[in-house]
Image (cartoon, rainbow, N blue to C red; front, side, top):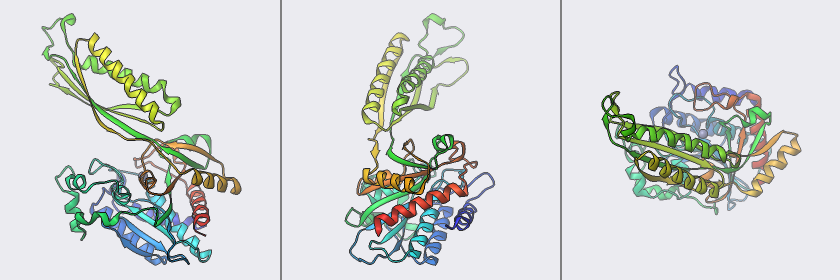
Length: 407
Ligand SMILES: [Zn+2]
C-alpha cells in the first residue's frame, strides 16, 4: 500500500499549527479549521463526496451499489492539545482516506463507506472531550452545548456561527444504526503496551471511563511559628496522606486495569508562614470494569474519612463525573483479530485507558478501535512517534475490516 503517500500527508498536516515546539490546533481554532479544509480537498481529490454536519464533523463518502444500505464508517480527529505531536488523531484521518482510496481500487462495494473527521475531540479548549462524536451519537443536550466557553470566554455557539452553522440545528447531526452499519477507528495507542511487547496491532475490547471527584480538606490556618506541632489541623498534611492512600488503593487494583491520579491541587492560603487551612484536590480514577471503579471509590472514601478523623481535619467529596466503561463490539473484535491472524500480523487484545470518538459511536452502532504502537508510549507531546511501517500495517488491517463489512 501507499506508505509514502500516508507519511507525506501526515507531514503536510503537521505544518498546520506548527509553532516550533509542536503542533497546536485547538478545537475550532483557525488552524484546526485550516486542517479540516485541507482534508476536505484531499477527500474530494480522492473521489469522495464531502459534507460537513451542523457541529463541524467532516464526512467523506464513497457510494456503494445499494443506495439504501447503511454506511460502514471510519474516522478520527484533527484537533490537538497544545504542543502536540503529529500522529494523535491524524493517523486515523489520513489512514482512513488511504483506506478508502484502496477500497475504490478493489471495485464497487455494496455498502457506502465513509471517513469522518470528528470535531472537537480533545478537551483542551472547552474542558469536554469528543464533542463531535457525542453530538453525532445524540449524547449531548443543546443546553449544555450552549454553555460551553473557552478560557477567553469565546462560546462554541459563536464559533459555529462563524462557520455558518447554528447550534440550534445540532440535532440534524444525530445519526443512528439505520444509516451507520459499523464504525472502526484507527488510532495510535498513546501507551507503551504494544511498543514493549512488539505486537503490531491492538484490538481494543473496552475503553476506560473516568470517575472524577474533588476532595476538599478543611483544617485551620494558623501561624507557622507559634502553633505547636501537636496542636495543628494542617489540611495539607491530611491531603498528602490522601494522595498516598489513593495511589496505594489504585495500585492494589492495577491488575484489574485501575489507574488513579491526583493531578491538581490548590492550597489555601498558600503562604510559607501559614499552616495550610484548606486544600482542594482533583482526583481521576479510570478502569474498564465498572464494579472495580465503584469499589475503588468506596475504598478512597473510607480512607479519606479515616485520615481526616485521625488528623482532626474535615473533608467533603464532590463527584464531578462518573461514566461507565464502554465495550467495543464483540463481532468486530473477532473480525479484526481474524484479519490479523490471516495476515500473520502480531496482535493482542487490550483496553484503552484514553477516551476516543469510538466510545460514543459505540452507543449507536457496532464499534471497534484498532491501535498501532507509538514509541515509548509518548503522546500529547511533540516527541510522539509512530513508524511508517506500523501505520501502514494499521491501514492494511483497517482496509480489510472495512472491506469485509461493506462488500
Ligand atoms: Zn486522539
